[in-house]
Length: 266
Image 1: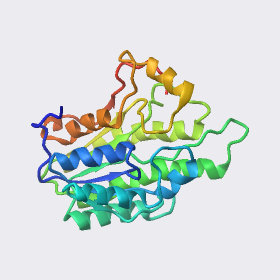
Image 2: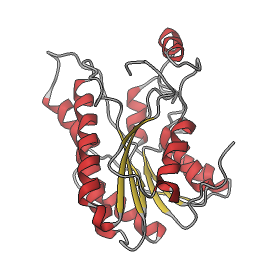
Image 3: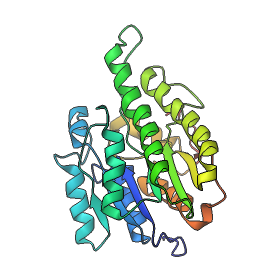
């Protein structure tokens, strides 16, 4: 049951990484809009389709998601899909969202790029792509957000790590490096932007069932949770909603793990 007292009425929030129904970004958009926020969503379905074997991927996924929520009566706007690897994209996404919503006081950065590569097979291109999509875009988005935020209001930014601050996934080295950098970015910008009334926190959602894992590995991960089930995007949305509500107004510069007690090394 949702906590009806956690409201975001009057908030205007940009959420990235919302390109398919099973994603964390999609769950966040729905939950935030249900709580009264005006939400703008951004995604890049082309990436989902290149990964392969991910449930709910489809061409024009973000547009379809926005229409689905609009048909439900939710205040969800579409930001033009674009590739964060390209220079200038991050700032344009923030600017378009602010234009469509009439300003921004919240932003949730869930998008990411990740590939498995063993040492000896690292390439400059793959390293650059990870750093561009996962780190550079987040830095530029936060900078753009800070430039347009109303400092008289409570503003909140939430980033996403994947636990690399606790352990390194060596077969995902470039991804691990980029996600650990997000922790540094969160803590640093929380200090830099406090005087602008902007809170910055990072969620480590642990293993979430977003349609990317199957078979024996899926069952192994489920058993690593005391409850015997995976975490869900809805579990993660509960925490993000709290951080962006008035209840989270004294929390900033934190990395918060939402793992359900899992001992998984994911």
